[in-house]
Amino acid sequence: MSEANLTLTLDDRDEALQLFGSRDQHLRLIRESLGVRLVARGDTMQIEGSEEQVNRADRVFQQLRQMLRKQGKISSEEVKTVLDVIQHGGDLYGPDNLALAEVGRHVRPRTDGQARYVRAMRENDLTFCIGPGGSGKTYLAVGMAVSMLRQAVVKRIVLVRPAVEAGERLGFLPGDLVAKINPYLRPLFDALHDMMEAEQVKRYMENDIIEIAPLAFMRGRTLNQAVIILDEGQNTTVTQMKMFLTRLGNGSRIVVTGDTTQTDLPPNVTSGLLDAIERLQGVEGIAHVRLTGRDIVRHRLVKEIVKAYEDGPAHRTLRRKG
Image (tube, rainbow, N blue to C red; front, side):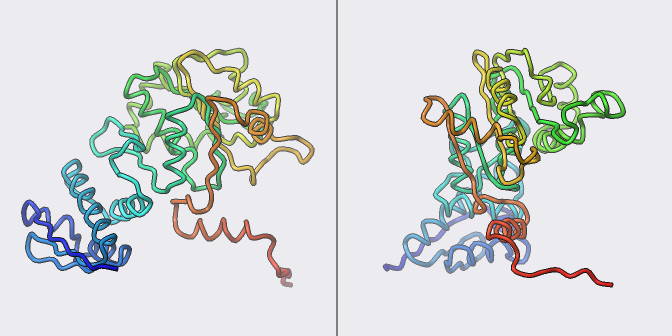
């Protein structure tokens, strides 16, 4: 394999310091991830390695420089994100990314599977996404909804979850409606607040631009010009899923997410998510995306935990002491 080298000339010493990181920690991340040799001298950077390695490193530095101009600083986590995207053939500011209005806020697919998921949501009116916890199912769906709202493609966001643990009999729970449904909808609130200012979320909810509700509240409605997200779709029955999918109105899109390995339905009840995926295979305008453990972007141990459980039951017996 032929060797290549490239010299990057940076704008000034300040840009070099930001790119290199404290004690060159960013350079170490890039060097270890890509296998290139990096030699920094003042405001220049010498990149050496195979032609493919040098090209990837060049793309990483160009993406980081672009990020630096937009945000004024970069973190080690952001360097890792850029490396993930480049190594999977992506572009940090490419068409698969979801730009949000606030400066420096944008949601990026960090794996090839996540990029396929974003493209599916862009190109289809109904998208089903199955995957393990931490693979970005809900987060990217909310990011897509916020991005489309910002661009005035839709006028509303409706976030829905089945409250299975309460049997959707919310009247038996203490407190007003918000207090009753909050425990079930917390993950959706968390994703929203990660992308928008708290005051803006509150204002949008007061003006009915953003609605967060349990699945039972969807019956009898038709939702036009909205992004409607059903989270934890594996916990719907066949009847509930049919009811939800038929809420789709003109100019709207639906995203259904779920983890089919974590259903809370009784053993004899068929999951509406699995049933819908089987029934709707091959229908034009409907996408089916399956994420895996390779798409998990939480703490690195989450990926190992999911893999350990997917590999089957433990081969040892835990004995109670005493």
